[in-house]
Length: 601
Image (cartoon, rainbow, N blue to C red; front, side, top):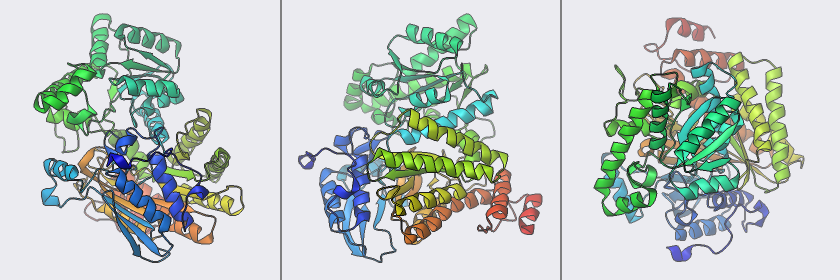
């Protein structure tokens, strides 16, 4: 199907340039082409947006068919997508979604990785990652923001500091998602050292200005790290080499000099796909590893697993000191466990390891408060429209703080006001004119209202698309990531994501998506997403209130149901403050004091 690869410049064109019968269809085309923009996508020729294998479509013929259907679609039709394949336009109502997407759905009894690989090779199913297959990717800005919040809160939790100046964060990966780590390190003010085996990926980030310095010398890497640490310099340093070598060198420095040169650490290789290019073994160079991967997969697999064991061994040694490591939701610890690495934890359940996932220790509490990655795209393509939305967003959050919120909520608002200002200063737009921040239910609705009113008044020139990362409060059931802090035994159930998808559809979302597979790989997670078009009308405002309220409260209620005492407190406060959320608490899971308080409310 490569013969159908377009010869047009692939990018998010201003919405009025798309030949459509309805403006909504044009906004979807805008989002699709942004996902395939070479400046945005990881492997655009393969229709892969990010994550190594997260696709928008299965082939280029499907792209053309989809764009053709969208150009013909009316407000009384819905386009149905089966794993990249456009099934066709079907009659529906104006209030129904214009687009319904499913990806990677396989009958449970046949949901083995081997069966999936066969079905994928046949072209009948595909892995849409999260926002690749739902057309809502906004470039690496989304993960930059998530990484900023994660590292900031890791500093607060593990190091007890608000200021990360002079602190060292070591990690790996400079690809479509992991490349965000370099920019995030500079924004939070720490020293970020990121290892990457692929020279092309590393230089792409360097030329982009996201990675400040590059070296292929471990000696120089350690020397530069020491300098920046001593000067409390904000630095992103790319090490062109294998992260295992870097971790082992840090151990050697500790053992020979007594100096611990790293404070925080993680990993963002595509470890959900470790034997097909997602993780490269330390024993081989990049080109040699690629050759062995193709010629002798079994030998390559064995080297990967040995490399994982070595990496964990080095991390374990450092963790005996004042160093803190977390799993970044890329299945690193899961694959390390499968490789026989020492990541076990006494008395742990199936989702716990020696080190926590970033959801369990950092983002889980934020999700339980209803905060998650709210996004918007200005479909005019005009940077000035984005400036207007940034100003509105800052104003809305400042007004919320002035109105009085509890300290935990205020901290999140303050972090996100800081983010909006930093995002503008660091020029984080790649592709479409888009922005992201973390907000709770009340904040998201207020932001949507402000944007819609600005469109109605002509302050914003074209529709704005609202969406989010599926990695959110209620978008994803992922036992080793998003729901890893669900502690009532239901972490492996997928009701929340499915209900999110269905509930968003009948509450007015412009499009909805449901995927098997997400950030930790196919078969490990079910996730749902949505797109919602604001066009300045009263109807759009009502839909936004309904969709955004459900999109958050579904997840907050789920986390409450899971027997998390902190979540119970938060749900009770939400009920008290908003008066719009009613939850039935399970008596067998509830703390009696919290249950009595809830019943009084």
